[in-house]
Amino acid sequence: MKRFLTVIGEYLLSQENNFLVAIHNRIGELPFLVLSLGTAIVLGLGVIPYSTDLMTNSAAGLTEKFLGEKQRTLVINSTTNLPELFLMLLSLGLRRLGGIATPLGSNLANIYLMFTVAPIITIGKWFILGRRSRITRLLNLLKREKNLVIWHLLLSLTMLLFSIVGCWSITGVFPIINLFSNQTIRTDSFLLIGSFICLIGVVIYFFCEQKLKRRRPEIFEEIEDEAFDSSWSKFVMGTAGVIVACYILNLLFMTFTQLYEPLLKSYFGTAIFTSLHYFIGSLISSLPETTVAVENYERLTASDLNTALASASVSNMSNLAIACLGGILGSLFFLWGWV
View 1 (cartoon, rainbow, N blue to C red):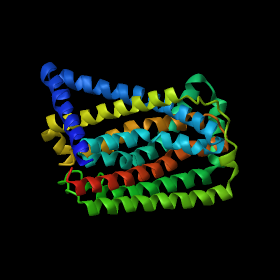
View 2 (view 1 turned 30 degrees about the vertical axis):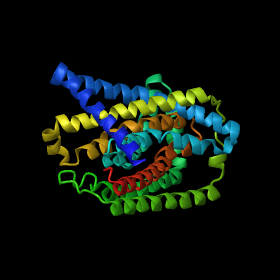
View 3 (view 1 turned 45 degrees about the vertical axis):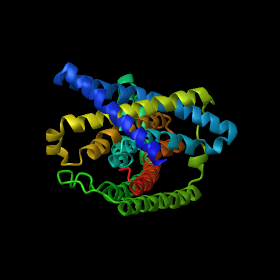
View 4 (view 1 turned 135 degrees about the vertical axis):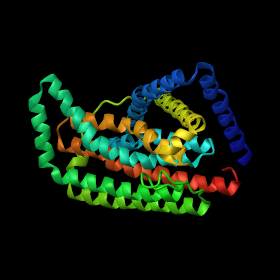
């Protein structure tokens, strides 16, 4: 197993050195930067959201077909986190622990995307289309369900707190606070501690959610019935699209770390790869959740509002679970001497 992982890692690393760096050397500095930016935009706004939507739609349909519609919501919320999972796993395949910062950084991105950007997009769309009455209905719904909004916001912030502590334990970086300092080389014990911290956050989330379900069962049951496509082929296509996009993003991050290390050090210290995942990778991987939030804000019901807000709270919990897995895998790689 160790030899297999080593061979895969060396292959991925050689692809990074021979492919993107070679393109940079061939076309020059400015064209490479333009190409990289264009690639990131296409992946972030096109390939990843579309592939995730295709994957989520198919997974929800398959779940409804084989397990029943009650499991559908959990599957939808979980599959929107697969970009974070694949970005992290592919990073570990490149022998870099910094990819674990993507699900942890996504907890920060989810808060400002779901609680500010998604409502602004929804209201802005209706304003342009002249649907002022729908804007009023949304504002009245938010006012009427302010306790639900506060519940999701506080739980999302709690998950963020666990992710910050977990990020320090797993990657050696306190996000924002010590980006300019040298990155600590973590050991397997620190990784396991970080995984345990993330696991505590997951347990707290489920405890709080069960209390909300007992208090407000209707917002989990009165969900609009949608026609999902139970297609294995589309699920595989969507998954493949996300994996390829995440692989390319990892290569871009590694190439920029290699080519522009002196410049990026002035912003991120030595934790360049980790910081790129924390701020950029997490933002890109959180765009599918933003799409889900906007779609549910537009439906103007309490149950769909709960689903929209859960794009932050549930996603943050899922990201902690992904980071927990990353910490465990990282500690195993240390034991094998692979990182």
